[in-house]
Image (tube, rainbow, N blue to C red; front, side, top):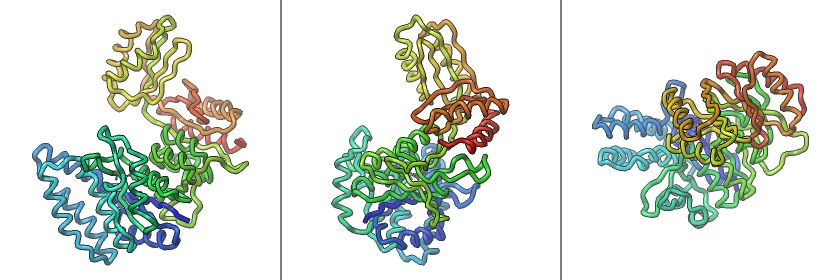
Length: 427
Ligand code: ASP
């Protein structure tokens, strides 16, 4: 039996966190492969180590000293080492990292050092071997993961041993460090589980698995005990921030069950993600994506409308949340992050390129996504949202998720109404 266990930054924010992780790992002899993130926030006003490393690099780009920031990073890792009564001499490593930063070292190397230091200390604390991710997570020169080569490399490096390996980074063919997107340690863990044919991939975080709704908006939402792989993928895509969206594919491909567990409540079962769920185990759960704009174009005479809109979006470097095309009616949902001005410019560019009969842009919207395994639940949920006084401007299906487009100012009331209605429905 082999369990690959990945611990996120909130589980590793200080020496108490490291000790808690040690207890969890050593409680089960099957937990032989451990993947770690960089230390995360200790409290809401704190900073993640990775964010501080990005900031160090930004300072150096403008010729500003990053000494104060670096000291905070080094102090955090020294506190972890000393608080766990370890004797690993990390001072020389810390000095070498600071010196390298000031020698114009690439950003990817700098920001990967949080995971590297976490893994070195965790390996020492557990008495496991340290395996550097640069030696097994291999990218091609375009930055794509070389899955077969990476699996083979980890297979021979791990070879039945107990190891700790850093998340978030690997190496390009020339040996230089390359990072995954932010939150990518989840992906590293999934790849390690698939590479080693693990029986289970445990992803340990600071919440008790997937909850039926955001606990900051709904009091004590029901825990979701089981999900299918594709359901978790869809929920992540539409805004649930529990696990990196790309972390599901490797375990889904290898059919390895994934359990999302809480480091602070290890006795709770969390959420188990598998190919199928047990009968009667399904329940409606909600996720959301805030601050979107809707661009609508009506161009029934334009045969290439979809391609032309895609080109306009690519030129504006805007990644849409979704694009739907029905009989010449195009609807794109776009993040509002670039602000109103670029979105209005985009509307003009789209109008010029597609010459639509009508072209409207509506801002400050949100998508409320409801995972419903039975389509009968959809009208009941939209009905409850509208009855609460929040108009549903658009309803789309994305996999088993019903996406309801509402005014951002009415998002919370919509969620409360839909959540209350879901309690009376059997999914
Ligand atoms: N430390 C990296 C980040 O903050 C990667 C990770 O935690 O998964 O994005």
